Image (tube, rainbow, N blue to C red; front, side, top):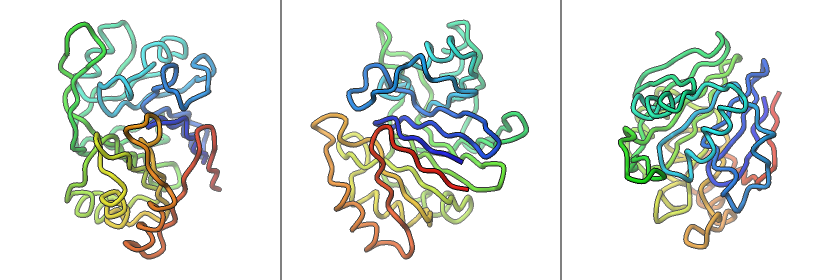
Length: 234
């Protein structure tokens, strides 16, 4: 299994059997991302909500690669109207991709309108995803969110992710203090920070975040990837 951080909230995950999963592909306009859009050839694209810094290059990448977009019912309808393949879901639902990887849609606390069209369009709600790999390992991508109790009662107690990818930038999402609590609540053994340092208004100190995680958690390791860096696990 390989996780590559592309910057902001964008990640590429290669599953244990080779399924290529792209999440929130804000690529071409992302100042922290140097990956060319044309090199991204995912099998599926997961989109947490309709804001431009998450929906990003979804349409171009899906068109170039033939990838299926997985998102809320409303956002999937928008994608389908552009002539592309999409699967709509809602919170609590799960789907299997190629009988390999299970995708579960979970709650997030954030606004979610499609904000890159001429007028704001309905985008459903903001969500996160639990990705269950072939081995049973689970990756939680929280999307944009503030701290909320179901990170403990649902994400931590029920889904028990091995890896939690959490926003830490503050202002638009939770900051490092709340994200450290979220890391403890999820009970993940690895936490990867995201949605920080892309722009001046969301600058954060990942060393301080790691210390806060250590204070809140027992045995949780903070892995602060730089854009373009990968984490590989057997």
